[in-house]
Length: 280
Image 1 (cartoon, rainbow, N blue to C red):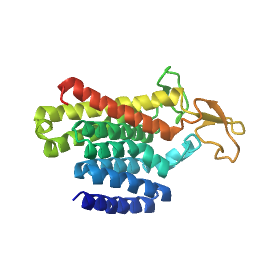
Image 2 (image 1 turned 180 degrees about the horizontal axis):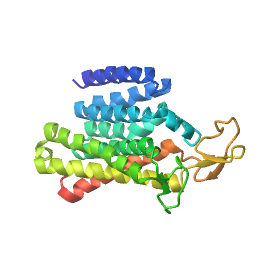
Image 3 (image 1 turned 30 degrees about the vertical axis):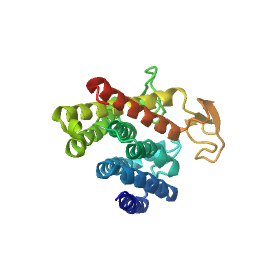
Image 4 (image 1 turned 90 degrees about the horizontal axis):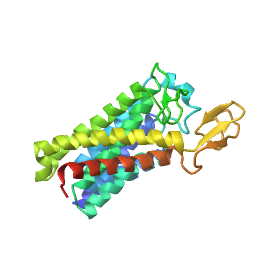
């Protein structure tokens, strides 16, 4: 049964990856990453885990194409475009794949909370980025409140924060629903299902804010002397000139920030659950 589930996960993730590639949401390496993450999550987790991953991927991909022309001017700020590659798929789904594997080898309901918290974080961050950059108000650094240019790492807006809450809330709602339908006895209790929805949503929102905190403080940010602009791009800016490190840790690019933040969201969801219920 486990082998059949893994093969089915491979088939479904390959199909979704192919469609996403044709729509421009994934690069060729991104298709491989999506297949790796999708096969692991569906194969070791099951339907509920796989559906939660698909909801994240479909909603975030759709938003990346929303008002795409208005976002084009911000491409110089971001290290990569809306077409996800291998590193991005692993950054966003790698933690979830790890928890699915742990759930199969060391079964415990806590892995579901960690998995949902990780996906809520990356979904919240993606929604905040894709919708926040369209805000009419200027973003402010999450650390100091200083007004910064749109697209600056660590910059947040009210619209972006509300979008993050909505993105985390969607995952939280589905995590609660699936736990109530498919979870064990204690997780199927209506009160516990409500707790799951709340803690996953809160963890996702806080995880996305932690992502912004890392972006404002220690993420590697570069500078193009030719254009006089900050960017996440290294070693070459879109203009064709080399960039130099302006601040942050050189190894900590946006992909690492996303992965670390997803782990933080997972830890918060699991921690909140244990603190509120004492369930082990």
